[in-house]
Amino acid sequence: MLYEQIAMNKRRTGYVMAGFAALVVVLGAALGDLFAGSWLAGCFWAAIVTAIYMGLMIANSTNVVMDLNHAQEIHSVDQAPQLWHLIEDMAMVGQVPMPRVFIIDDPSPNAFATGNRPEKSVVAVTTGLLERLNREELEGVIGHEISHVRNYDIRLQTIALALSAAISFLVNLASNLMWFGAGRRDDDDDNSAGGILQLVVSILLIFLAPLAASIAQMALSRNREYLADASSVELTRNPQGLIMALRKIDDSEPMQAADPSSAAMYIGDPFKHQHKIGDLFATHPPIAKRIERLEKM
Amino acid sequence: MEELTNTENKIAYSRQLYNSTVASLNMKVQSFPANLVAKVHHFQQEAYLEVPEEEKTTPKVNFDDLNGDK
Image 1 (tube, rainbow over the protein chains, first blue to last red):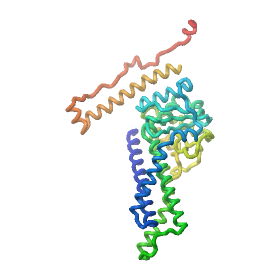
Image 2 (cartoon, each protein chain N blue to C red):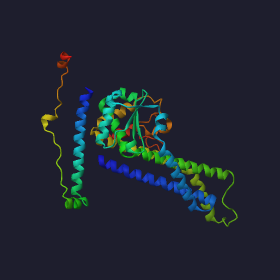
Image 3 (cartoon, one colour):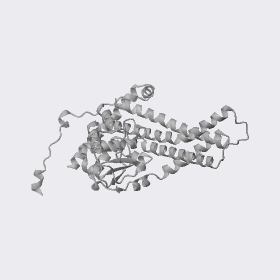
């Protein structure tokens, strides 16, 4: 059951990433066709823009994220012995290097992990998490975060963010070009039905791409949450701890110190948005559904 | 108390890690195509680390005795 869930989640992530990449290329093709008269050139430039965005984001994500979320690094075991020991345990059993440890001064219990490689990973927890959760529950949460590190979820999140940034850049470019009337050469014999259809499809694509990008990004982060829950249980061998922790995180007030752009990284939605089940734009699956899956293990 | 809990957890998790590593080794040695390589190089299945029942019980620790010495 556990391993099936992990395999299924990995497969789904593959589909979403493939769809995402296809979207960037198709959008590039539509743009190229519309403005430069060559869809191949469009694909080429879209790929270049995406690569640049990805490089920029991977280069300087960690410290920016920590500052945005008001996290303070702790350097020794004495500053938070229980937390430090639990992170040590989970890193050992998950076979990843010991991450750097950060604490966020916020009474609402929550936690997240970041870093592009397991060697450079970071785990951050709120003071509320340390105060309200017992050792068993805390262990479930730390297991979840170490699983994000182990599954390369953080890198995946960065790549998804770069892809959607590239898409919105391309779409902005397109709408500016349209505004200034730099349309496709109109002296050609383009008045055929095929030409018009092609034009309509291109324009539709440009408008729908940002929407598709954010849906794909959210779907990706929801799947990764389920996967990290399952992997946490693989590490701790104790679904009950994580179930109780998720209940406590769900039943608490919204966070003050969290940054909206990092909301998807937290174990529970830090702003407690009310989403209907199956909502396409939710960053997190409903807690009830996560608990239900954990109870099946 | 934290020190004791930590030590006990470290032992338990080390055992868990050892056993899950043994499990994946045993699976690999038996399944195609790795089993062919394993046969050529004489990789064997390993035994799990078992703990006798009497050692699994939580040891009772009493700090009261120590207070007198201090």
